[in-house]
Image (tube, rainbow, N blue to C red; front, side, top):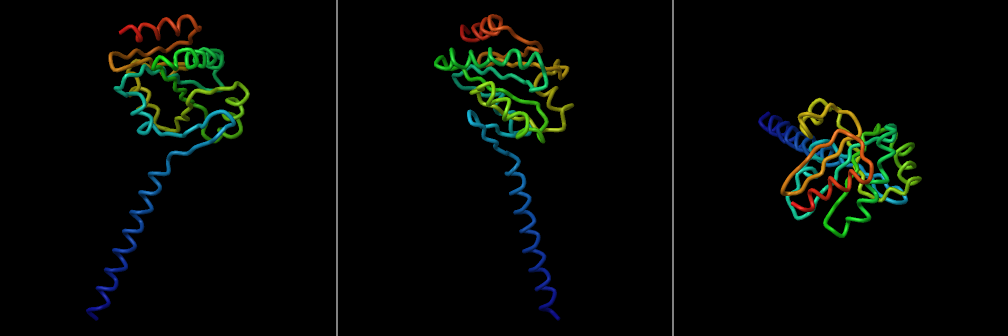
Amino acid sequence: MIQKPIYLLFILLVTSSCKNEKLQTTEKSTEKEFVSSITTVKTYNFNQLKPLLERKDNKTYVVNFWATWCAPCVKELPYFEKIKKEYGNKNVEVLLVSLDFPKQVQRALIPFLNKRDIKSDVILLDDVNEDFWIKAIDENWSGALPATIIYNKEGRKFYEQSFDYETLENELNTFLQI
């Protein structure tokens, strides 16, 4: 009779450690990758995205929040691509954060990126807690698209607006002169 409780305790420990291992695996696998013919789209939640919005190295970052269903977003995307091309050798990195619907990545987002030859890094933000992450990105952001952050270790500015190329380039240059 003494052996039975020990055996049950052993089974309980093994089972609970397996459950913990499965939970850890599930948490790690929240990042999904979808590969287009041009770029790779990674799916992040806000906690995974946050470090990309707070880097303190020698680069200047241009982070654009957009969606394929947002006409002003689509109109300005070529300007971000041009910034990437013209300023990439000047320590400028462009990140496009898509707010498209996660279930439509294969059907809508990937074909969109391929058709428009988008080469910038693309992250699909898949986090249902928008009340939290919108304010965490910028306390004054209403959540409207497009929205852009330009930052480096010297400063940061949030823009809830669409850009033409000249305005975007001028804003970027204020960071490059800091």
